[in-house]
Length: 131
Image (tube, rainbow, N blue to C red; front, side, top):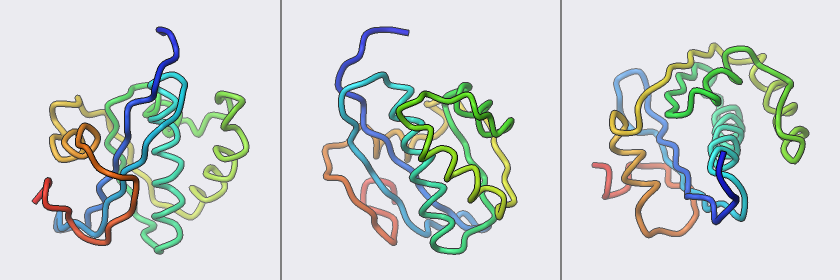
């Protein structure tokens, strides 16, 4: 599992059914394990999508662990995030959800956002790096 360190940044790109970017966000982590950053990004994405009424959600994640948690809607979750995860599970009841695994190299725009030097934030458009 590795030792805790500064968590790599995480990013999400929201697209509509025609693959147009509806928005994207980028977040920095803190100190912890890399998979924790992925979990926080997924929880944040669920909240953003629900708040905007985007209830058809297709999540592509490069973490099989995250994919399995979403597929099974598991309640076996790291204790630090259990309250946020349980809230996300309640929100997921409103969603039509599809979850698939994608290798990091297969999702170049999200990879570019996660590795870029940028501040945390939400953009209701495609940022220049991913156009």
